[in-house]
Image (cartoon, rainbow, N blue to C red; front, side):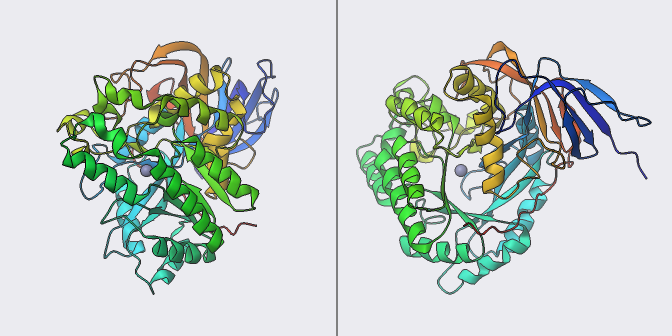
Length: 467
Ligand SMILES: [Zn+2]
């Protein structure tokens, strides 16, 4: 039998969602046996008679490996393709402390769900981090809803639906309702992109008609009411169908408030937001480089940032995700026309340092809150718990060793994402990822890539029936 690697991570400050964090917490040791955590404790003895490598984590925080539950690595929308491969995308994520992503497999029209997953699995095979998939459902005519029943066999517990983007992705209310009802029956959770298609279309057409096509009009093309209306409607359709739902990338405070309200009526409803809506606002569209900020939904009024942070601080936001899309700068700059520029921003690598700086250091949240929104909740909601999302005996040894000291500035050159730009360029960040472990193996060690291609694995998920 091959000797399993054993590691003792000595003297770090372990943070989970349940930690009562203070700066003078006693340091904790973590013993790793193969791919999982064997023991956690203060001054753990070195197991005798075995070859154990001791890793000094003095002065470092040890967080569960982050789970980014909304990424689009190596994305092909049918119109645009991001520039990254799964190898590159997973490496960039690893440098950001992300050890698992829940990305997407897309059922394009005419394709079955197993075909969609098979194609996506082949693309993801070179990944160095673990991955699960939401199934994007685009083509499910009346009478074919039962096809969703195959998803649990494929290890898929969540589906993605869109209320906009004609003709390929858009689903009308009747379709959303049908799919919600069937998904709930199979223990599937529905993640929904909420923008009222009529409002977005009308506003975009009016800008196009008057020749206002430049990037600077992007924000105006997709009004905040489009999101609020669609989120409200989707929550009610989910309530009517008795279906669990996740509202994707909330860009406005009211979207979060609507979800919170839905929960008070005992609805199973969750909401995610992203660093871009917490840290950036629509004044950038009037600036010199509006091309950097083409995403859907777009950036909002400056007042939304503080309002969103207040909801985050109050525990009303379940997950912070990136909605990562690694389009290259050249793709973004190709034509100064918001209707012809691919939407989506690169974000995996900067997620942790930005949230550590502008969330924790600024005092909106504490470290355990960050862990809750970026590891534990995604694991619980998407049924990866307790294998992922925490630091506990028996869990996968997915860990981030984070040095909270030191300051840096976000620059495109220092990042491994292939975009060649970052929407957060020039922003100050505190702290850095020193090392990342995925199932007991260093994938980044002391700031250097340490993993072979293809060492990440697909994580199959079981359906879940919510109380
Ligand atoms: Zn997305």
